[in-house]
Length: 252
Image (cartoon, rainbow, N blue to C red):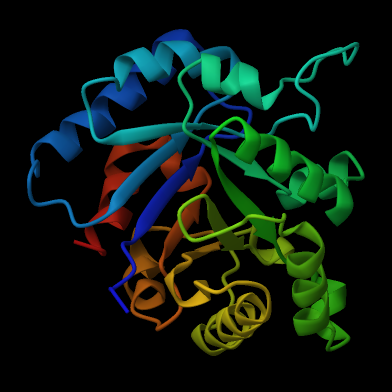
């Protein structure tokens, strides 16, 4: 099996107006350009929907891909406030995040809905980053592996493969809290996810599994060294070019 190419993805969430968003994207592009020809990883930024076209244009000559933070399961219709996968593609996106815990919690999304969104994204040629992860209460009850396994099985669409799908494990209790799962916990869950993928896919060994949850320059190297960790889905640290790039450098 070929070595999996690391992916460092930045989820900007609901942050960024025009000027600061473009400046951030340009700063990250400048960092990447300084290593042109020597980058052995993929880079992705996922700005808010209002900035997608502008950021896509800003990064058009760079190696950095652009993704949406969510999409609707339908291509069009009377769905006020929603954005379809086709719209993301039209705005310059190559990727989209689906199933983030903040969508599952704040909007009541379940794995069936996540699966439908991933299917729609694939139909438009987008690569999907499917998020899975347990709450603190679920982990304390010893349910983490069952929850993660169930979300994975329920969210993975037909036709998913290592080229069009990435899995991101984000323990809900570690997102934006400063808490980070222990190396042993991350290794256990990622190994479990890899085993779950093996039951569903012929190319499971090639599919990338990212870790997310308060990833920052100080802890990234240790996490990226783990066998089944193939990169990171970065939240707060992706809003500072220096921090985002420092995380990326741990994979160079």
